[in-house]
Figure 1 (tube, chains in turn brown, blue, purple, green):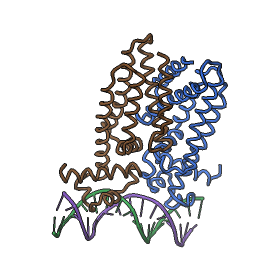
Figure 2 (tube, rainbow over the protein chains, first blue to last red):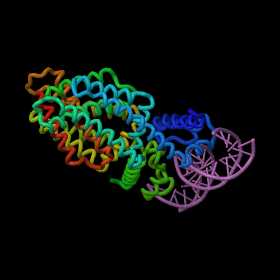
Figure 3 (cartoon, rainbow over the protein chains, first blue to last red):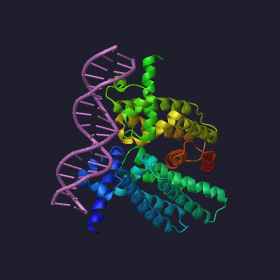
Length: 197
Length: 197
DNA sequence: GTCTATAATAGGATAGAC
DNA sequence: GTCTATCCTATTATAGAC
């Protein structure tokens, strides 16, 4: 990586950490400059439109990286051993949002939701829908007596288990990591819910 | 209501609307003063410690009001007709977070999570746990062949359906109201999941 | 590319008249 | 209780030297 790219990345990394800790509006460009160890004007050399442009760069990078991880997780799906694969998917998502950068990106994305551009919003929603669609297809490829509509409903429920676990632990309880107990509760719920098949 | 109480409430209402729209740090005391139609120093007469004290008052009022509504919803529970009562609970929560004040309180609570005092955090978590505990008890009072632990797991799943629906629609998709389609999807999920009984 | 210096403004908060 | 005037600091952003 060139030196100038490193400097740009340095500013992005510091900005992401501070935006996650204090929020976008609660973070000043001075703080960023100090913690990044750079001079007053340099942020405006890399981001001429200032703080807002830095936020966009941070969000864009986060969406981009998590998109690739999410797609990789879904590509591993093989439409059999549904319970094991559901938990593998959950564990994969957990890893993404527990990685330092992933955690910070999650906090920023949720908290600064209203600052996101239409394009960024569309991407978020599409990523979310993609997982659910893929899960529906996987369930409908199984041999069951259930109607396709019921299997779509089941896929929504499986998504709900993961979303609620992550929301409750990371956002509501404000924990940095998912506890083993929470992971176990999700496993039990997946097991129970799949009994309707 | 006395005139001074009205003025205090006026400031709280304007502050809540602006904090919900722009975030706490993104809202200036000047904006509040302008939209409340009051003079420069008056905010500090009602809230001597300034903006932060105003936020605390807003959060306190929100928690207080929603606590009473939540308790009323749970008191109506009669441990029979589980499916209908589950949907009544969901509809009740939906009403709370779709009311203007409830919606703004929800946004502020989620977005300014890290600014909440320990006491306020504890209350939030307790309210959340309370619903789940009550749901578990209701399920365990039914006559079924399921073990109590399974019924606790089922209660978590029922909570998950509601949480994910609200999270997805109000926070991720940034809609102001829950669509009829989402409400219907929750109903179908509740119906399907309760078949494990 | 990176620095220092600084302009221009916006922010929170207070003093004191009425 | 409510107002006007204002202090002081923080903040964003720019100019220009190196």
